[in-house]
Image (cartoon, rainbow, N blue to C red; front, side):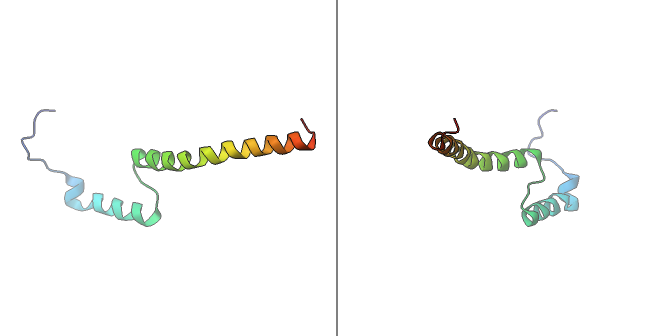
Length: 69
């Protein structure tokens, strides 16, 4: 793949497929590209990890208090 010198053509963009995919993705709230889904999951996981760790600590503390461990 060589230099394009600023001139390129995309059949998908010309037919409106890219715009339609973008609209559908925004409507359903789930990215249609693999990279977009990974980015979205990464944001959600970043928020959930501290809560999961805190939950485990609280459960261990409760078990210790009740004498289950």
